[in-house]
Image (tube, rainbow, N blue to C red; front, side, top):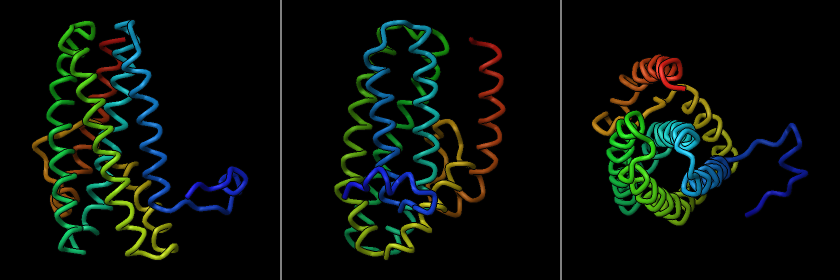
Length: 198
């Protein structure tokens, strides 16, 4: 369902969790297009860092807010959750390796090849979420709850780690224990990186 622009611009309008996730996916797709098309290594470095941050924050919020809901649904919903989490783990491993390569040489052919690989992984993952996860959320929760979930999702993004942590916990209890600490560490590292490499 497409929400009319005049409704979206109304201050009283609150999006639901499905709309928030679709918007994130659209922004990520646009970031990926720019990154894939980029030929300047300096610009590629900055585009990649912004994308890596966006992905880490988005996935962190999903792991905290969305996937525990699917786990509680059980059955097919839990199997879908497990597949999406495995995709995320694989993307985190690739992103972590790319972050090391980018720091050394954002013009390397390995880094450029990894960008294409990451783009494919992200597109497949986003399409699977939109075709499998979002319908489950829409079916299981009424509009009011979906809007509350959107607010929780945005709050989770504000405190999520800004880098991929492929070996970090994906269960809610582990995220609640380590997520805020990792987020602070990540933000300090981000600041140091901006100072060292411009």
